[in-house]
Structures are given as structure tokens and as C-alpha cells.
Length: 440
Length: 143
Image 1: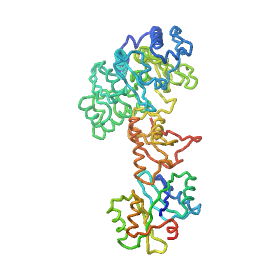
Image 2 (image 1 turned 60 degrees about the vertical axis):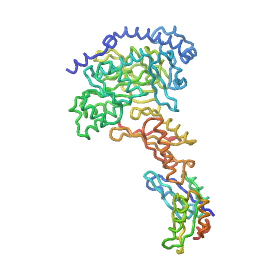
Image 3 (image 1 turned 180 degrees about the vertical axis):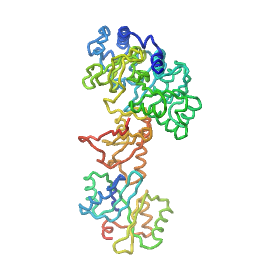
């Protein structure tokens, strides 16, 4: 029974089950078009290509992709806010942004065709999760500049499902509406799903007895163990959806019911795995940094974007019948980025807050833990002589000021704890910045 | 006539206070008065010692966050109602007390009250007009 459903539900069979050779031809044509366009429209890419002595006509095969320059998050910041856009502002219908390290967010844009494609990719993902137009989808991802909420929203509408755009937070209401509306699919971060399950239990509601049957969870790393735990506790089928705003948002890749890695929607994005140090491409099966090139985006095309996420490529076609290239579940980062309740956090952001309040050489440490099902961030800050005051009120105000600044910069609540100088563990003189106690 | 108080930041974990007193003891520094203000996360140890500059140095060398504050010390007869008289004076003129602590001297009879107020100049004038006796560091050491 289950097997037949796996085989039957595919949103766009023509594209998703395409013969691989045909797909490569399609990828090549779209890649050539993308390179030509960014060369003409985006000075950053034109310069980067010229520096390497290549032009749009040098892309003759898919293998030539590896000659193209990488794009890093810093390139996006350097071109803040609109420097990476490849269409006039009049053609842009939506902007999203993610929080920035030094106050400069990463800005991305969509034309109406881009939004159309994005909705298609999210529909594919929802179908991967087992969704149909009969479903009621509760979207508990945050709505706003973050791509999670609105991204899933338009895909769910495209699918024809009944959308409950509840956004994140207010867990009791999540549970009540889930029960009252008969939600069948929940979309949120996996830790929030566990939290909702806990709140339901506390209020005497057994999720297993509700119509809820599937979950599409992403925006933070999780493990197969956590998926199994979630599935056992809630009685639903959970899949991992992957995406990042720089590439499009949720819907870059998604797990299907076979639950063996994630399908990359490679008729829109070409994935590569490279050695994070040398940048050399790595063969399928080998772990390295995930890199994406968009081949259908108009407003914000991206060439060989270094995601900093660690994964590997699975070349064998999936048993579900889709022919996409798959990637393994993300198993780490090449940098020190943390994902806390779905929000990207860099230790350097905390540093910038401390520098702002006048610390010249701040020593701090981020301790991330999971209390119940929710991530909790504690920031230890060493009290330096210049911060120290003999008044309790002065120190309490300092702690609160740091806390408010962190919350307003990151959008994640945290607790600031002042500690004595030289008490934060140092490795070769440098303070150890992050302690992640979460067992994912 | 001012008195130097040394403040030390302490996190709320076992043995932190002992560490400070041990450091001072080994340096031959005598503590004349102390008070601790604490919250759930941290504490501030305030000290009057016989050699404040030396104390500052050894504590800094040990990596403590320390600061120096000028406070007011007055002599108060060790009798019911005496502290109240002083507090009433300050209250009557709207001078806010940040904190205070007291100790009784070796010989008994009088107590020393250490104050930190928001407006030290005004407090000083007010207290001397009312014949309250100020003490300097030497006097505190001998007290």
C-alpha cells in the first residue's frame, strides 16, 4: 500500500521523472542562458568572470560549470542591497532578507516568474511529504522577511490545499487550531514540531488521535533519529525540506516517502559538492561543502553559491521514481554558524553587539541547549574592568542592554550571564565561542 | 575625607569568595569591612582594606574584574537610633543611598558606617553641618 503511494504521488512527473540525459541537456541550456544573463546584467559576475578570463561562450558542457567563480555570502553583502539583482527594480515583485552579521542583511529578490517557479518547487516538496489538494496545511514557519512562511504558503496554495497561515509562536493556539481545523500537514522547524507535540500532550490532546498525518520540517539541522522520535511521538510521517534564501528559500530539495536523502530540484538548481578548503569538486558519495547554481531564476540568479552546509551527493536514482540528484541530510557546517529555532546565528554577531557597547576585546561564549523541545541560547560575557561597576543595578542594566541588542539583531531570545574574567575556556588563547549541547 | 572601597565581580559559583580572601591574605592585606550584594547570577564584593592600592594590584594580577570607588565613612555611636538619625537627614534632603554597610570597631563603643550616595558632595556638607564625624582610611584601619 505504502509503496504504491510512494510511486504514484509526484507533482510534476514530466520534469521530476525526466530522463537524466535529457535533463542534462536542459541543465546545460539553462546554465548557458543564466551565465549569459548575469554577465550582461550583474557587474559583480561580469568582473568575476573576466578575472578568470572566461565569457558566457566558454560554457560548452556541464563540466564547464567548475570553471565558474564561486559566490560567497560576503559577495552578497558587498553588493548590498540590490547590487546582485539581474532585472530592473520594476520587475521585482518580492524581496526577502536574512539577518546579517554586522547589521547588513542578505537581500534576495523574485520576479513574478520566480515566485511562480518557487511555488512549483514547494508544491513538489509538499507532494514528496505526502500532501495533496485534500490536505489542510498549517504553516507554523515565521512569515515576513524570512522565506519559510511565505515560501511554503504559496506552494501549498498552488497544490490546492487548505492553508492555515498561523505563522510561528503561540503554541497553545497551534494545538487548538490543529484540532479544530483538522490540520493534516504541519510545516515548521522540527524542534517546533516537537514543542507543539509537547504542548498538546500537556493540554491533554493526543496528536495521534487528530487527523494530522504528515509533517514537512526544515530550516534547521536535524537527524534521522530525531525524525524517528518525532514520527513515533506524533504518529505522522515527517520529511526534511531544505532551502536557503540565497538559492530560493524552502524547496531547493526535499525528502520523499522513501526517506533516503533529499531530492534536489535539479532542473532549477545544479548541486555540487566541493572540498571546503581547496574548492575542488568532489565525486558522488564524498562529503564536502554543498554548492548551488540557479538556472531558472530571473531576479536573483546565483552562480556556484557556497552554502557552508556539509553534505554528499547520492547519484543512484531514488526508488520513488523521481530522477533527481539527491543529497544526504545536511550533517554540519564548514563555518561556525548555528541555527537556533530556525534562525541563523553567527558568534560574530554577538561580538558585534559587545563591540557596540564599547568592549574592545570581548570574551564571550554561546551555550545552546534544548530545554524541553525548544532551543535555548545563553550568552556568557566576561566582565571586563571597563564594564564593571560596583553597583548591582549598573551590572544588571548592562546585562539587559546586551540582551536586548542581541534579541533585536538576531531575532532570537537569549539569556545573558555575566561571568568573571578569564573563566571562559580558551583553546590556544582564543575563547571557545560555542558550546552546542543539543542532541539532535 | 574619602575612603577607597574596592569592588570585585564574583560569579555565583562555589569558592569564588574564598579565592579573593585567599589572594588578599597571602599578600598580607587586612580586610576591615566587607559587604556582598548578590543577584541570582552574580555578586559584587565590596571591601575596605588596609592597603587599597596593593589590594587592587594583586586582584587585577589574578584576573579579577575590580574597581575603585570613593565612599564616605562616618562614626556612629553604637546605640539604638543613631543610624536612623543619619538616614533621616539624608532622606529629608532627597539624597539617595546606593548602598551602605557597617562594622563595629575593635574597642566597641562606636560603629563605622560606609555609604555610597548619589550626591557625595551634598551628603558631605549635610552630614558635617550636623556634626557627624567622618573617618579617613587611617582612622578606619585603627578603628
